[in-house]
Amino acid sequence: MYERAFALCARDASLVAVHREGSLLLATRGEVLVCDEAAQTALARWAAVSDERASDARAVRAPFAFGWITYDAARCDDPSLEGEMRVRGDYAPLAYLQRFMSWIEIAPDGRASASGGERPAELLARYEAEPEATLEPIRAHEIKCATDRDRHRRQLAVVREAILDGEVYLVNVARMLHASEGMSDGQIAARVARSRAPFSALLRGAGCTVGAMSMERALSWDRATGSLETRPIKGTRPRHDDPARDRALADELAASAKERAENVMAVDVHRNDLGRIAAVGSVTVPELGAVEPHAFVHHLVSTVRARAREGVSAREVLEAMLPVGSVTGAPKRAAMTTIGRLEPERRGLYTGAYGVLDSDGSLDLAVAIRTIVRDEHGAHYGSGGGIVIDSDPDHEWAELAWKERALAGAPAR
Image (tube, rainbow, N blue to C red; front, side, top):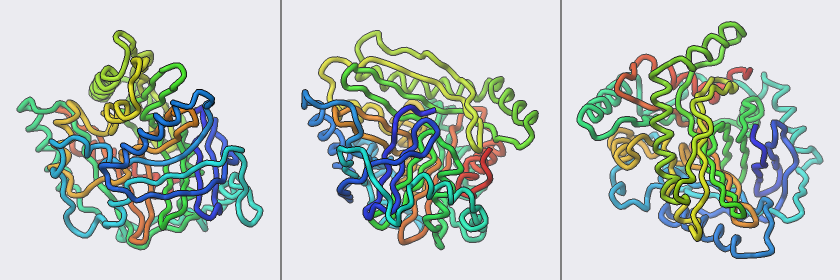
C-alpha cells in the first residue's frame, strides 16, 4: 500500500479527500489556483517550484501542492518528437487536450472540511454503498473511440515491423475512449472508492473532474536523502471472482516468459532514465516482476531505486523520468515517435503523472493510468498495453478490456 498521502481538492471545497495506507482520510483545504498553461511550460513550472522549496533550509517534508503533468507536456521538451502527433476526428475535445496542468495550493494546517458537514471519507463511503445510483454502467453504444479492433491489429503489425527493422523492441500502444454524455461526480467518485487503488485521486474544479485509480508509482524523490524510486508495471492478467481461478491467473502471469520479458524491457528504460540523474553505481533493482493483485487485474511490478547525484535539479529529474518508460516503450524516444505516428489522438492526462509536491521540494508522482477525466465534452479514459515481437493481437485486445473495467465500474474484489 502507498504510505504517503495524495491530497485531493476542489475549488469550492465540496469534495476533499486523501488516500493513505488504504484508507480515505481528511485532507487540506487551501486556496486553489488552477492553471491552463502551454505544454512547454507546465513541466518547467513544477520543476521551478520544487527547486524553490528545496532552497528553504527550514522546510520539512509535508504536502505543499497537488497537481498533474500530461503526457504531452512531459514530451514537448524533445524537439525531435514535436509535431509527430496530430489530433484527428471528433474524439479529442480541444479543452481536454489543452488542460495541461492543474495546480492546487494546500493549507499548512493540514485540516479541512467538506461543505454540507459531510466528511470526504463518509461521502465516498456513501457512494460505494449505493451502486445502483452511482455505478450505473456506460452503455457501449455511448462510447466513441478512434481505435477499433481492426485498427488496433494494424497498429500492432506496424510495431512488429518496427521491431524487426531494429527501430524499437517495446511500444506501449494506447487508445482513448470518450462518452459524450459524461458521468456524474458521484459515478466517478464511486469508481475511485471501489478501485481501492494505492494512488487514488479525486479532483473536482476548474470545469473538470478527475478520478484517478492508478497503482503505478512514476517517481518518488526525497530531497533530504536523495533517494529516488520508480515502480514500473508491465504484465497483466484479469482478476476472477472464483479464488482458485484468480490464483491460477496470478500464477499464469508469474510464469509467462513473454510478460516477464516485457517487464524487464520497461525496467531497463527506467534504470537508464534514473542513471541520467543518479550517483554513479547507485541504481539498483531490489524487486523484479513481483505479482501484485489489484481491483480489476493482476500486474507484474518491479522496483528501481537510485540516489540522486549531487546538485541535480528538479527539471533534470522530471525531464529524465517523464513520461515513464512503462507507458512509452524502448528505446524511449523511438517508441514515442512510433506512438506519435500510430495513435490518432493526443493522450492528454492519460500516461502523464499526478501527485504531491512537498514543502521541501520532494516529489511523489503516480502514473496517470486508470484515470477518468470529465469535462464539458464528456468523460475520457485511456487504456493501453506494451507490444513486443511475440504479442498476440487477440490477447492484447482482451487486455484493453480488462483495464477498461475501471471505467465500466465493474465490482472490485
